[in-house]
Length: 150
Image (cartoon, rainbow, N blue to C red):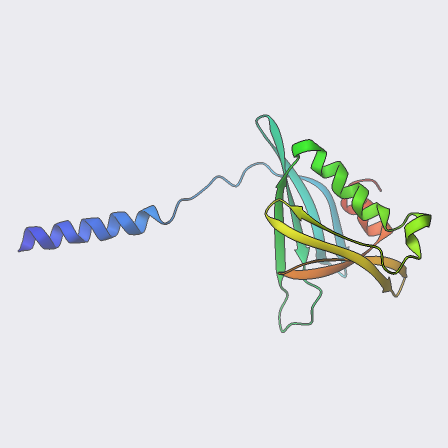
């Protein structure tokens, strides 16, 4: 009976351990960061992972909540995803799209569906970047700064 108890304890411990695997945090390099009043609104970082580059977009949810909530999107640079994302976000500020209220884009970024649409900000025109986890409002200057272009 005691042997069965020890064996059962060993199996439960082994099964529990297999559900938690610690990973290296990696050497993430910053590209750009948006801060407002000392609070990070968004950041974009990357790390080289062998033949590809992995990006991490970390965003503060703009919804009113009792405490700050953040969400993140991780994606690889497959087929120039980084440049394509920047081009999509900047396309909202092009003269032909700037005043088109119906202009919006929906795309898959990593494993996350993202929607982008126009948003009027206090400082002027901007975009609303949203997923099912939350949303953020960014100006053209914010987009440039986030992507390290400013």
